[in-house]
Each structure stands twice: as structure tokens, then as C-alpha cells.
Image (cartoon, rainbow, N blue to C red; front, side, top):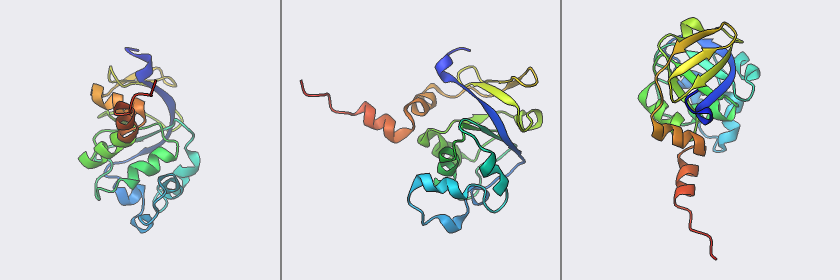
Length: 174
């Protein structure tokens, strides 16, 4: 690994197809829920309710192209993060979903072939700096795009708000 603090390890909880939109991830009828942590209770509720019970802390969702398309609602990324999902790996992301995920501290990893190469239950190790996914279950390496160092910094901080709070914290009075 190029930087062990930029490596993630987890299990593939689900492999999904293309065009998973934000309504599938988090149904619009729950937009009135303001507690971000409660959003996880409705993750994939309409289309893939079984996924919610399979996600263990640090697990990955793997998908084909255009993950997070549709509405720009931040709740879709929040529901994934607060479900315990460690990262989403997809061939491509809708731009706003990608930004929302990084701002919330949820790694969004671009890999054109991961959905075809990964299987549910596979154990993965993802190097965010090198842009490599090691499928430990099948002993293969899958190409991914390295994340920008600024995105990694936000993820390490837990998201944009914790990052800004830490960066702009008043020095302790002596």
C-alpha cells in the first residue's frame, strides 16, 4: 500500500447494475427525516431492501455506471454512510452524488470493471492513493482511479464539516 491510512478493507455487501438513482438509494418520501443517522433505516427500501440487513460496518457497495444519478439529495449518500457502508465502488458516479459522498466522508471510488469482477461476499482491500482494489478472496487486482489527495483529506477527517471545524478551531487558551 502506498499509504496504509488511505487503505480500506471490507466485504462486498452487494453488486448492483447501472443507473442506480437516488430514489432507489433513498426514497423521496423520507426526505422529511432530518436526523441523518435515521436515513439508514430506509436505504434501498423500495428496490433492494435485503441489502440493508447485509451491510456490516466497513462493507462495500459495488455498482456499474452512473451510480447516484437523479435527484441531488444528500440523503442518499448519508443513508449509505450511516448504514455502515465503508465505500461505494462504481464504474462512474453522478457528479453531485460523488461530491455529496466525499463531503460526508464516504469514499466514492471509480473503477470501470469492479462490478463485473467483484462478487458479493468478496473481501477487498482498496488503496485510495494508488487506485487499486485487491480482491483478497480471488487474488486479483482491479484497477481504480486514485482519489484526489484533498478528497482523501476530507474522508480522513470524517467529511467536510469535521474537516472545517478542525481546520478553523480556535487555539486552546493557555
